[in-house]
Length: 147
Length: 142
Image 1 (cartoon, chains in turn cyan, blue):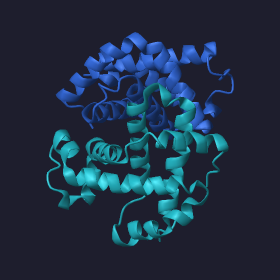
Image 2 (cartoon, chains in turn blue, green):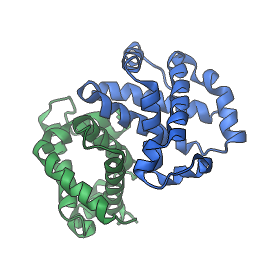
Image 3 (cartoon, rainbow over the protein chains, first blue to last red):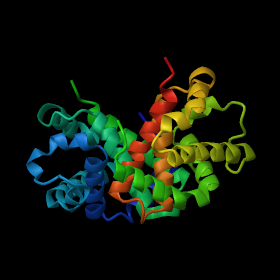
Image 4 (cartoon, rainbow over the protein chains, first blue to last red):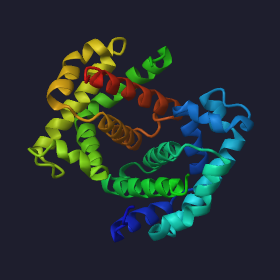
C-alpha cells in the first residue's frame, strides 16, 4: 500500500514519542464511541456508554483504548511491513471480533483529530499527511486477511 | 439526520469564536486537504496551490464563509445553501466522497486551533453538522 518516505517516518516517530499512549488511547476510543455511536455495537460488555461523559470516563473504554494504541505503537516500529505486523490481528478482527474494516478508518481519523487537539500548531498539514498515510496503512493491513 | 438543540448551541457558540480566524482556518483546511488527499487537487487544475497562494486564501475564505452561513441559519441549512447546492450539482460536480475528506480536514484544523473547546461532545456536534452540510450540497446530484 503506502510507501513511507524518510520524512513520513520522522514525522510519525517524533510525534509518537510525545504521546501518552494510555491517555490518548482512552480519548481516541472514547471519541469514536461518542462521535459515531453505532460503533458502540462492539462494546455491550463495557457498562455505561449512556452519555459523552459516561463514555469518556468509562474505565473499560480507557483500558481498551490503551490496548489499541499500544498495538499501533508496535506498527510504528514496523512501518515497512504493516501487513506482516497486523496479520494475526487481521484474522482476529475478521473471524472472532467480526469488525467491519470501515471502523478502522473511522478510528484512524479520530486518532488524527486527537493528535491535533494535543499538539496544535505542531500538527502541521505536512505532519497530518504522514499520519493519514500511517492510519490508512494500518486500516488496510488490519483488513488484509478478511475473507 | 437532524441536529439536536444542544448540538446547534455548540455549533453556534463555537462559530462566534471561529469566525475571527475564518480566513486562515479556510486556507489551513485546504492545505491539509491537498497534502493528505492529493487526489482532491484534480478539482483545481486552474489554481496555484502552493501554500500562501492568493487563490488558496481566497478559496479557503469562501469555503469557511459558506460553513458560517450554514451555522448562522442552522435551523434551515437547506435554504441557506440552496444556491451552493445547485452549483455543486450542476457545475462543480465534486464527487460526494470528497465532502467527507474536506470535513475531516476542517475538524482537524478546528481541533488544532481550539483544543479546549473541541471536547468529545463538540467533536460529535461538528462532525454531524458538517455531515448535514455535505448532504445539503449533494442532495441535487441526481
